[in-house]
Image (tube, rainbow, N blue to C red; front, side, top):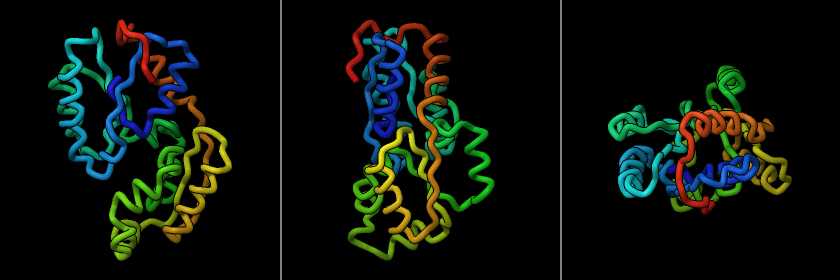
Length: 202
């Protein structure tokens, strides 16, 4: 499975929970989300790099802001990806995510990974530490931050709260766990069979 680095911990956790020792993950940098136009070709390159080494390849990305360009690559390469528009929908489930979105369109979402790495990926990654005026340009239209927690961790929750304070917007936490991701991957594994002959190297 070629996956987004932001999903690495959760994917490994679900794999180990189900004893899917035949699955190997290769993750691309989570920082690609700051430049989603680069995701499709990065995925294509990784697929072609591994094509002759695995019997099956699956893409551990949703659309992730590529505007359908990732699906074009996936179609051309004859593979499949995770369902949904982004990992937020994947973790929360479509019904809950749609309800959250409808309650406040101007919502910024964090996962465990994004909360833990907010300073590096958002403040530094978007250059806000160097050019503070960019904060309003990027986040001026947001009204609320929703932290979609995959696990209960006071330290990560504190970081999510701090992120909301930094952005100057309301804070909400929703505990999602790995249930939705687990169910999706069960379908993937049952439909596709072994992904690799190798032992997983999470």
